[in-house]
Image 1 (tube, rainbow, N blue to C red):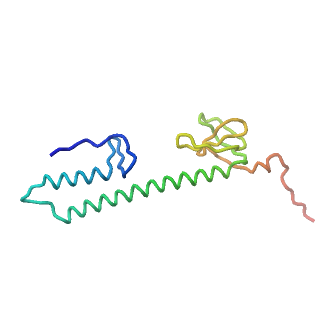
Image 2: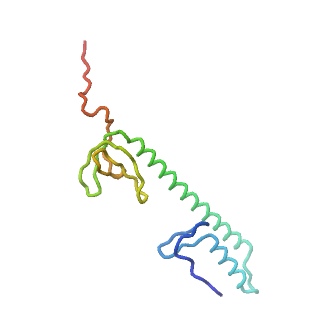
Image 3: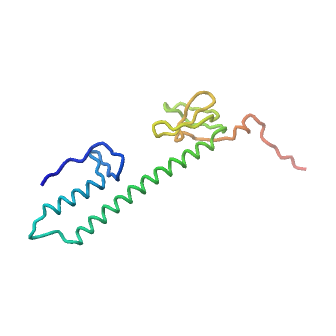
Length: 149
């Protein structure tokens, strides 16, 4: 039986299972199934229910991978929307070195898959490092005081 190693680099199409050693696509499983059928013992052929179970597992794997990809995209879009809502707000938190930062968010950028907030003081802060958000319009104003009559 001829078995070839699966490619270690991701390809453009197809569903993949990613492990630390290799990445397999659903097409690789189908090739393995065909190879199994071609090299099976003619006195003990594979049963139909086994083949159907394997095909079902491949289908479930594809669905699971597509769902994971969709969820990653949804989380990314949600985070970007949340970060975008911070534009014009005063945020406080820590920078990458752990130094306390405070500033008004002027823009939001995605760099290497991470969301960063650019502040009016020229500093950057990761969305994950934000510890407080305040409306920039209320900064510097005296607190409202209610006077009882």
